[in-house]
Length: 248
Length: 273
View: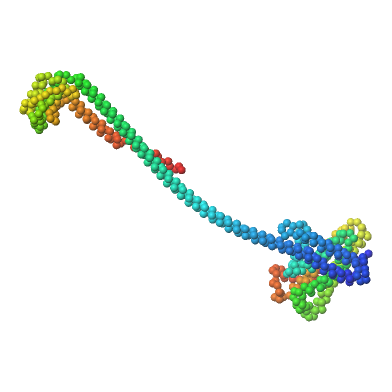
């Protein structure tokens, strides 16, 4: 029994190997890309549109709306990165209903990779938005003393992201595997359904945390220094926090 | 070791590729489609607004035109009605006039006819009356009546006023032909002599006389000389009577002609169109 799909190795040549995590990720990428391509091949701009187009529009506009709600002023700019995070994690857990499938997000390597991406993307977006100096000055706030703590916070939250997702997804798979050996009938189905719900919640958490981090890196500055005019509405209401202690 | 660094690296690359793929095939087309739809809806709304404005404008224009048309129509109708009324009045007047003329003409014709009929009747009646009277008196006339006539004649001669007497006397005396005494019957010698005597006495001269019978006198005697005549006859009375009756009839006709029934023209119909 493997703790993670990393352990299932199909092919190996020295450092390079082809394990289940990579293969299943490719499968998911294929499904997502081909599905999107098929649906968006014939997009209607009129009032009549296909059900699949409706579904994708709902998904995309919902993600867009969530990003905007967190406080990012130009959600379309971050949609590619953040939306893909959500969709990948969500689809990875959704496919657990397929027998023999193991979610790649159940591998700490995958979640670490995703966390690293967020870890890199946050300063990238922050620097792009406010310049290198402006971004780095954030680490000195409120005082210089806080610099090491800010750096630790940056690292620890990345670690937390990786471990949280990994723990949740792995535990779901583990529970299923253990239950199958104890009570092979009925009960695993209930747990599988619960696993689906957990997977969706985790996808949302991962996505919203990444959004909040990016928002904090780009928006946590005095309003007068902003380049763009403030968007109307609930800015203060959705003022993102650098850390999000309300997320377990 | 739970983390396999090659897998981590591969997953980072995979994730970045997935980001690119989804950007390329999912987000951009979907967002573009939504934008296009929003634009299209906005355009349709704008078009609808424009059409609405245009329709409003056209409606206003139409309403305006309609009002103008109504006014024009009312004006034309009023004018036509007035003209029709005037024309009707004119035609009615003409017709009334024509009718009046016709009635007057007819009345004139009637009156003429009546008058001529009256005249004819009068004449006929008069003639009949006088014919009867004449016949009756002629039937009644006898010699004794002639005697009485002679007496009346002689008395008349005597009673003539002086001027007439002088004039007649002068005429008789100066006449080349003898004075003519006409009577309805042949006068006997005694009466002739009496007449001769009376004339001679009256005019104090020996007047030459000639006696003639004239049946158209009906009954009576007359003495005629150059343009002058004196006498008495029933025919004279009858003529006087005839003249009087004629005058009477004429007088009677005149007021009738003046106060004849006034013909009424056709009453103009009112209220009808």
